[in-house]
Length: 181
Image (cartoon, rainbow, N blue to C red; front, side, top):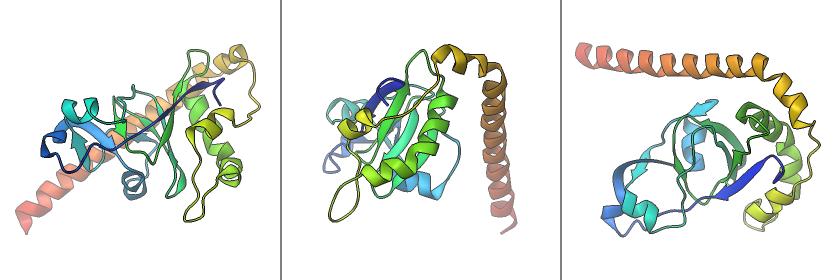
């Protein structure tokens, strides 16, 4: 996997420090992806502050990072719509310039059963960042992948646009229902 992107783990700012929470940096846990399974994710239930980011092991991931839950459970998958941070339940992949985000997303989706079989742990299965980096994948040459970019990138852009429209319509629905009831 390290040939197609950089694997980045997450972290959680201390919940004992209120100044680390309720900021403007979206922060995800695997639960957020289970509650809202979408191809693209812009935020979760919680946000952190810059101090929370600076004083924890979480990292600010760039847009189009492929978010991959590495435990509890393994295999929730989404693409970051914007900069985002994750908890330690993620080993996300920042695609390198030779492999577009849609390819890394589809690759991880197809590799998830194999990744789960490589996981370890007695209480619950987990795949470590080091193990995910070493996970063997068979990939075409990046030049071959890029030939398909003109086909797949517009499809993923349409998915992103559709999910944004669904969110807007859901907000309108909620507002109307609140006025009625």
